[in-house]
Length: 176
Image 1 (tube, rainbow, N blue to C red):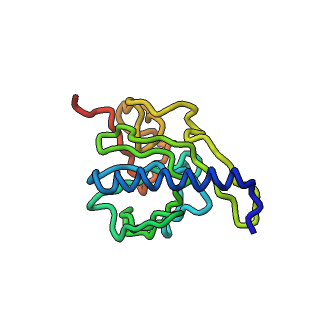
Image 2: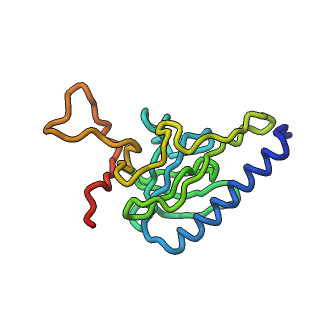
């Protein structure tokens, strides 16, 4: 039995329904877009999972004709296969979605993220959409890395290992 406050349950359901409605429009009108998902116990990214930095800052997922297949959703989750280095089964709870970006990197929507807590657990709560940033994403921010990367001045320092499984997308160099 769910022991959460009825108002909290209602707010969580409203959050899910609203995000689902917005995503339904985006899925039908945008060929490619990005979804920023914050860490959540119910977020599943196949065998890949979340990598080190993603466990704190979340992950930006690309939805497009070459990166997504077998897309479906219900009242709680988005289900699909996403292309990383291989196709991975993905389950995204609506409450962990913090932002949606269009192909050019402009924020379409930004929300508070929520945690549902487990069945019988009263720990469901609302979390800020930008816990590690503390500010809204600006036009000069790097979408893939969530925070702006340091300026490149040649080769990357040897003490900063790059995870080859993470693709960083930087929209700062777009043409106007």
